[in-house]
Image 1 (cartoon, rainbow, N blue to C red):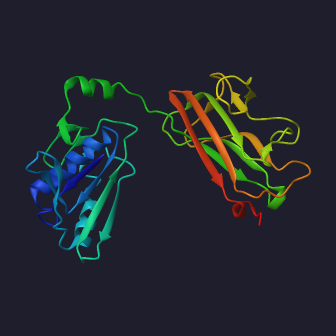
Image 2: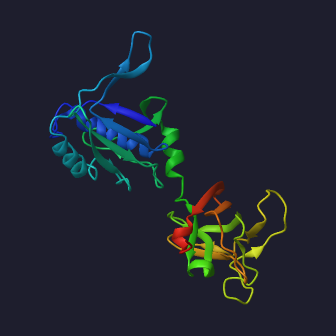
Image 3: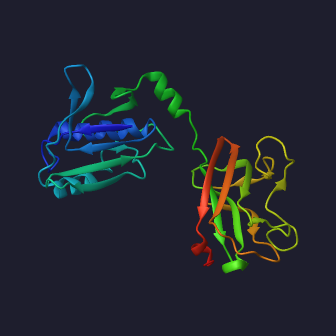
Length: 275
């Protein structure tokens, strides 16, 4: 989501500027996250289309950036983690500031700085949250957040790439599932993670997606917050052939409370020490 804001005062003393910041921080964090571009005037044109109409920029943008950083921890309660502000200078010598607000893992967040209300983003506007919205959010629990993990523990043709899952969320992930494929001549090692055919999770039968290497387990397997769970090993085999292209890993994963995610990760040959 994207929002544009003009700036009345680079010192962020103006009440409207402060309220705009608090409302956007609350609304984006309570929804799907978003970007604010400060120094841009956007409004509905004669055709009723909401669009950029002027680019006034920000006078003394560095001061404005500094004030944003100071007020980020005061603009909402509780604080939103991961908010970032960046200065952008254009060829026309006009300066702008971009604010990135991630979706929160632990909503709701109340807008402060004179607002003391909860907001959400819907379409191109921020709205005060209704009672049922708050009931729903206060009933939510922290969620796990998985990502594919890889680590090279070898070099050159002897590269051994560990593949697994990392939990970057604030809750534990139970019953994880991972399926992957790797571009030849790379392949899953039949000797496991330790050389004794032991792997991090049970192999699953070849059903469902076309990814050949599937792993999963029950609720007895838990990936705690901040934890890496190593599952399998990718190598070039006992008699390695020099690959001509980068290693491409296609994957999908899921867990209890984590919808199925699909993606692709590329490891450059130079990262593996293969020239």
